[in-house]
Amino acid sequence: MEGQDPVEPLLTGLHCPELKALTTLDGDPVALIAEEGDRRLTVLDVAARSTLSSVKWDGFLTGVDWEFVGDTKEDGGLVCGDFGRIHFLSVATGQHRSVPAPVPSDLMTYRTLRQVSEGRLLTVAAGFSGQVRVLDAFTGELMAEPLLGHESAVCAVHLLASSTAESLDVLAIGNDGTARLWRSLHPRADAARREGEVNDDLVGAALVRTWSARPDEVIAKTGGTLRTVDTGALDRFPGDSSRISARPVHYLGFAGEEDIAEGPTGDLNILAREYFTSTTDGRSTRLERLVWERLSPNDEVSTALLGRVHDDRPRSSFTAHILPPTENRPEVSVLVWDLTAGRITTVSSPDAPHQVTSVPWRMRGGTFLNSSTACTTTTGEIILLIAGPDPSSEEGHRQVYDDKVPFRGLLWNVTAEREVREEPLVLPPRTTLMVPHHAPSGARYIAVTGRTGDVRVVDLTTAQLTHVRSRSELPGSAFGREGGRGADHRRYLRWADQPFGPPLLVHGDCSRNDDGVLMPVRVWNPERPQESRGLPMPCRSILWTGQAPNGEPLVAVSDEHGVVLCHLPSCERVWSAPLPALVTSFVLLPRFDMAVGTQQGVVLLRPRLTADWRRRLGCSS
View (cartoon, rainbow, N blue to C red):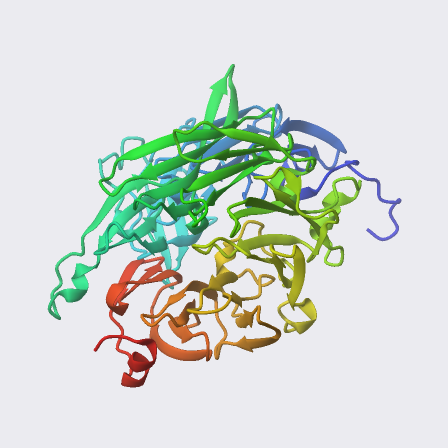
């Protein structure tokens, strides 16, 4: 490059561009550019300095892998998997088509054969079920028997250079710690069409929780399904190898721990997002539904459709929060915030009429640039906290990548329809995670952190901000590690109730955002804000906080070996157990039993505590 003419830009005026894929077609370099701000995909002929095609894209642009296929610009295309569908985009025309995958959770990782053969484009896909599948990217059909062997989720697949349309050589890496090599011979369209082919027992448990209406069962989210697991297996005789009962009760869709709340009558309220594609006049459009579902103890379901956004409005233009019941607002409710229109909708039950109010702010950039949370205060008022760059600044979208520019925090009283404070809060740069303390009496505190690792707490009674930890207090190797937005915030921030006094904040380092990296976990008390104590071991994730039988606060974390239970007042280790799988969730059951969610399934444990700890925690003998 040295000595050549000055570099000339290929595209200008782009809003948050990202190079997604690069290949050679007809001997010329060709690139795919994704533009988050304008939600556009552009295929660029680098040699000719020209655009081959450019299309609006209403699917996700971040966290999605695109692959070039074909050898010519005329016949070449791009393939990606996104929320259970396989997409194909023509390089020459930008024409888009998509088909559903047979198993939506198995598009976590995929690789596509470069050449089309007999009108078929073979894609190898895998994910949470542990099975590796060969699909036709044009039709979604299964083309061969599933490749079996991994005991849990498959995190990466690769097609070896020796692969052909008649014989695929597949390398797969699993969370069970193994790398496996298969040869899938003679794919055919009529293979693997047996009903019940998917083995649900292989699907990892991303969430476990209790349900007061079913005290002898634990609720587990495996894949997109909510299941009940019989905990009575812990009372069987040692050596009893009979199967543990696990029954599917509901399809959960895209919902996390923070999207589930139990109502006063024992019903489970679920705020879920459902994604699908509609095709009109040959054009596929990605749609999103926001659904509130209420599951009763006898498995009856009531459903309310809360929002639907299509391609003429980015699906990231609204967000929603479920509000647990409190003493002054005893019913579960849902808040939906439309960032573009500045409209707030609150719903008190799936079949109740909506209440609509407005805020004076219009937020640019959707949920990519702005984060929010909501809670009910001790007085029964609903508060919305918004974090994001200043929308009046032309450079506002750049603040999401700037580690030195603070975000502004806006507090809005939804019930009274007014601002809580005139001046915005000064939040940490790149704030993305905000966690209220949802107490039975109502919330007083909201913990805030982001990609720089700074942690602060908002006191809703005074509308003031308290410093908890800054990036200067982090180990040098931690700062600057990048991860995707939308990480599970409960991994880094959790509140723990004490029998008396304010709650404790258990906080990790969000700047790490990596299951493979350990982080220090510290404990902060609002009554002693200048003090900070740490757990005795580095951790991967903060799994759970709760109370011992005597009310003492406890925390469960995952470390490099398995799961550890600690006593928060003293920060001492109570109990630990090694587990040969990635630990994802935890809940303490009655009688001090435990359910641990891993990517190999649910593990039920009855720990053996020392006599001293049983006395200190108030456990029965």
